[in-house]
Length: 137
Image 1 (spheres, rainbow, N blue to C red):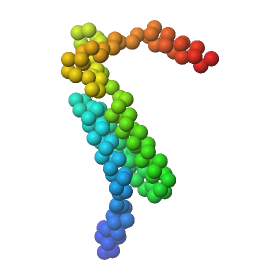
Image 2 (image 1 turned 90 degrees about the vertical axis):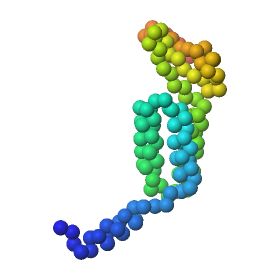
Image 3 (image 1 turned 60 degrees about the horizontal axis):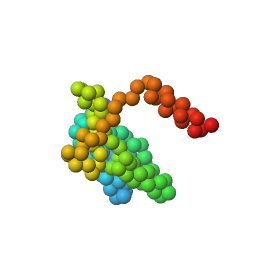
Image 4 (image 1 turned 30 degrees about the vertical axis):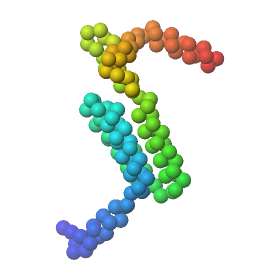
């Protein structure tokens, strides 16, 4: 059973836990949510997973008050947004041929089929890894 003062302590605790978000942080969060929504528009699993990951990352740094750290985090958010908008391509495997079809940003509908990639087998992966090791040496 709660004491008579408990509701007041709970309200005070709730007030202390709620903070006003930084407008720049909120804007970065919204931009990232829009970028992931545009990228994964037809993929419910990726939409859900990316929303959860984004929210977790922002909540992890929720209590951050250091201006330098906040600026660093906002710069990282801008990089991730640019990466999502310009560097990530999502492909779909075609059942008939086994090839992957993907759409390149800015490509027209007729041009979409021209962008195809064949599945990579174990030999090709081994050759690529050997080539990378040769370049490192």
